[in-house]
Image (cartoon, rainbow, N blue to C red; front, side):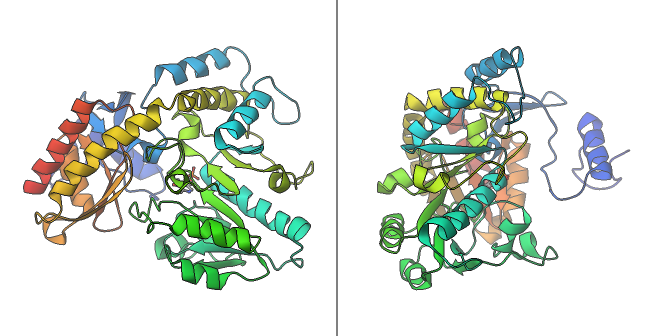
Length: 412
Ligand SMILES: *Cc1c(COP(=O)(O)O)cnc(C)c1O
């Protein structure tokens, strides 16, 4: 199928063909940049026509360790020659080690593995409700979970039931009840929303999709205090913020906060396989009995082997350090752009930034397209924000190179 005649800048050749076929035969639930990636390594991808791009999105943090990280690919290949799937009907020889090491990394006691982030959030919701009924003593059917406005926790029916984004919600009702929405970063509102039937507060310690929103100082510590006082579980969705991205293992670490439950995903699978998990105490995850929850693929041997390597890499502290150091550089340089006309605000922590573009300089989408033309891949979020989240293994020179391209695009 030929690219649309007369549409300026429509990709031609191998890219154009691949994009037109994708448009014809896949649901249009995404609006990808017109790049067709064929291969990748580290922080770089190469398209079907041999053009190279610096990947400054890193699969929304699923690629924290870069494309084809040799340690992760090595772990995956070794496991492919042993056993890939047993289902949880049987034990396998990577499972115990995975759970032990992940619990250790989190300073917790138990792990419940799933596959995608949304499934892990669903698992956290089910866990909190069950804990509420069995441990806290909430009357049956009354459990409430407090969430924040502008949250992003995934795409399942229950998860979008407590989204405030009309795009994510509209036409997908009826919605799952049992959620209370409060403004993000407002501790007073959160405290006022707690009742005796509240079983959990579910938050992103930094809101990713909302535009990399960092809450006010002491907010997470305040949430921790309130939830502890009121016997409510604090669930931290660290799917995007966790595992090194912000310069610490978890974004909660910046306020020395330990939640009751971590929800992990994305980078846990090393960019190789989907791996997610809920990690918590024995009191909380101990509520499950056989048959009450599960997943055919959750905790499979291949997932465990890759995640074990991810955990081993994080235990060195090297990636967190890199994210902190390069992040400081990133935020210093982005900070210089604020007030120059093109950039209205910059937020974030570590190697993670939301950059608000002045409407006079184009939409986030237009900036992303112009960056792509200069060899840098990023993604817009909402109308006017671009999100930068390069792999934590990005070279210092490459980061500089990417920032040069951004400066050039903003000067256009
Ligand atoms: C990506 C993301 C999810 C959903 O993960 P999926 O693997 O896409 O289901 C949930 N919460 C946060 C904070 C995320 O960034």
